[in-house]
Length: 191
Image (cartoon, rainbow, N blue to C red; front, side, top):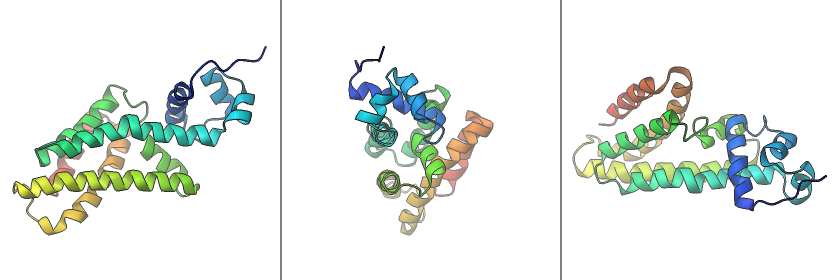
């Protein structure tokens, strides 16, 4: 008997996001999706598509996971302490398994690179948002005298983009304590 679609699209996206997060886009088959979402493959083929579910999962991740972290970062009033809190908050999210497998955007960039223009556009916007957020906090740190080379503000914001990738890789290889040391060392370069 065919399975009936008795879930909202948002519920499907939440579930699909977890599967894509754990297995990646390429590692997830339509059959995997159907089983994980408890729907028939024909629903995926006829109503959605693997790519649509993936793109909407990425957008859902940005809205529900990334944007709240970045909003908290931008609203920080403490400059460098705000950056430390932000990165250590990401490490805590990894420790507590709030993030099933490092940052979904980092995973996507590593897996997909430039294979899909729509995905490239999405993570370009994501990285621009990160850099803008870092810049806002760096400006606060400059204003409070925590950063010596104010003329390197844009370079520092770009530099911090790499810290997200570093945290993801180091957490997988060495765990949270190594990540915390890595963050401390990286932030010392701009103080």
